[in-house]
Length: 182
Image (spheres, rainbow, N blue to C red):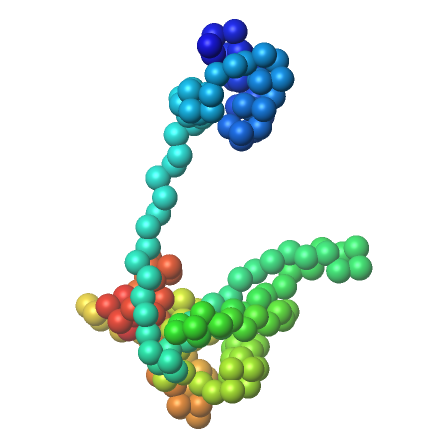
């Protein structure tokens, strides 16, 4: 039943059409077969799906930790391309996020953004996880790769009463799980 329509079906698969739409269109051309037969053929034509990266979700009690990281974006403002830095602060328990755009990733901007996040969240988590930001940690030492904290950052953490932690290098997608953070 499919033979007279194979080329039409291949063309439609190449265009990214759904099996349902392909069925409708080839039925208009005279195809009398069912969706199941068509669907099996369409699956043979589609590229196999790439394996998905699986990550384990972690859970934390309320108020236990938050995660903070920068992202850089290019945006057009008044016809001029401008680089902006966006600080994302996310509560680990609820996944509630605070986003703040600014002009740099300097320590003063990080501290300002964190203060704004704490005000928006109406509080501070017990632990704050960072992704090896240069303004938070100056590097690592020893066999256990302990962070060297930026002396301008630690008084801020002490003032707000949170314990800073940085992710283990090469595990940026695993903030918040004790064995991956120091």
